[in-house]
Length: 511
Picture 1 (tube, rainbow, N blue to C red):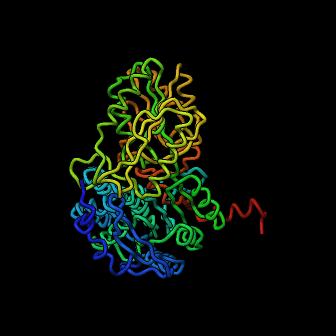
Picture 2 (cartoon, one colour; picture 1 turned 180 degrees about the vertical axis):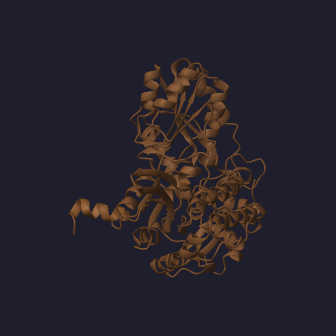
Picture 3 (cartoon, rainbow, N blue to C red; picture 1 turned 90 degrees about the horizontal axis):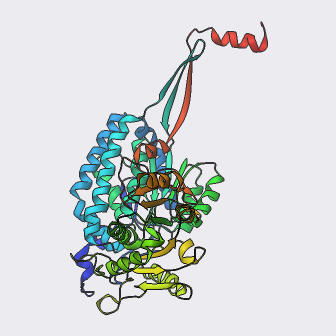
């Protein structure tokens, strides 16, 4: 277990790294001008990590101005030049991997083995992928479809992108938003969550070290209500990209509409985990535990609703509870830890309240409690399995965002798929079956942006991530994401130098 008395200084020296401020504008750290401060807290110990000056509207204006000034030069660079810069960026990220892993674990409470093996390598891979994608900003010839004219389509950068990232994957979300945008020739202002700004700032610093020009990437660390809203409403921001809850996403869309800017929303999820009666039960149990507890359940694609066909239901509940009980909860920096704390005590208490309310209408099979002893000062919550809740109950329909899996039975395949689709969300899902026809039906009929078969949670840079329904629209990662940050222009040539006269004569007659 950790030693709360001296844990934070040995983990990551944030106060030393960000003594000049927690805003990164035009290639340098500065202090925020809102007149208010915020303290980043280690959720494993409750200790203060960094107190910094929050960004206000003036800081957002300065960051947007820096991005706007940098746009002509960056957009005018050749695809090869942008690609080379992103390859250097990927190399710097790889060299700083341990720093990034430790900072991410400190501010989020993620087990260090998760940040070392998943968050940081995934970010480096994203940078390498978009370095390659930068060379493929391709238009399309439309040929001579209009007599003496030749047409083609250009893909062009949009301008300044204002992005807002959540606290559950600060480093990866910074990468998912920044990399495709700048690969396509845009410049960007990113607002991370105020409780987890460290790795976003480090990401921007690494870009400068790699030779990406000042002003291409800017970071403003402030609240959503002040800095975030001002960024979305800013008239010089041409596109807004937001990841977060559906409720806040609706507000972002409302504010963005006033300036008719491009909008990309990756919102909440309530992923179904559909187990048919011919599934490999042990594989499904392991998949459910891993898929529901990844990042302490603070993942919009995490398995949250397990629907298990009646013949396997009781065995699934029993085996899943037993496996959850083996998960080691503890210090994120300890090598044996499987599950760290939630990101904050506020989030821990929110999750606990969901489970406590569920006791009146469902069965809490295991977990459902705050650990004591050495973990009492942290934002810890034990892995929790809830069974026998009704489909319309709160724990089934609402996004809990914690280490809680709800299990419900179903009888027919039709019923299972209907229940899987029966929430407002549609971000991700999985189906478990040995029958290829059953599995294929699930991929067709489940309304979600990603459907895994006999697995849950893996993602790769080459494939898109994004939702249906109240989970938003637009894609992260992949070539689809790259295209999100471009606008399409039709160009038409008159090949004869007389077509315009002919057109004039057709419309206006001989004059």
